[in-house]
Length: 357
Image (cartoon, rainbow, N blue to C red; front, side):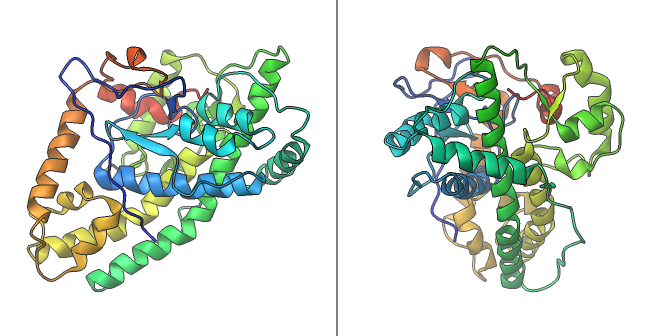
């Protein structure tokens, strides 16, 4: 179930990131992981690729649109981006396909479905009504972290399979919200960035499930494990931007996915602990510097010959990405992505409650 996934690697210096030459289509994370975003671990970014690819196929299927054979994404400096060029080729002949690509890439823009996309508009309206009743993935009962390495990894895969339908529905919700908000802007309405419903609750002092907040990476904890970050967000986020209204569908993927990660993390950490005890890894943290498709090698009895050097190289890439410039949430050409200010760790921590385009 885990296809082979390898991050794109771009060269970087402490001041400059050189991006590959791009045509007019953009790379974008503005819909699903906008704003300040730390680099993800290799496990984290490839797991996110799997979830986004699954969710995108589901969303396009529900809207009656063509499905990609492979996830139309790119990994740049350990962040995941949707690839406009691949999406545009996929949806070029579908009525309304161009507007769907625009909503996936630029949710803060404006545009409407053409008159010939009635079937798409009808499907979108039906799912929008359904998803207003959708609730975020609950944290659920504690997972069982006992058993052999193979049993733990099988439980991890089962938990992932059970969670992906919810994160896929959440991705559809974000897409439908972007389509609706773009259409209202195209009619002349002023539609500013919005908070998610949960972020609005948190920033206005109400109770909210903190499992919904945190980086989209299994390697890093959610705010449920670090509640002081929620308190800091209540103090600092309103100063960074004025309080805005919430959108009931916006931000759902990011939050549902973070809840799923909190279900998966104890199982994967248990796999990492057993691999360390058997001498496959030097520390349990090393397990997070393997891509998802190689996680099964942690159940072996003997250490694979490539493992130590592979982990070392990926750790070095991750540490470099944390210290060097970060690519923007939309990359529309090489001239726009050459030099970008380094995001402060504080900005990364506030990302989950900042306004969404």
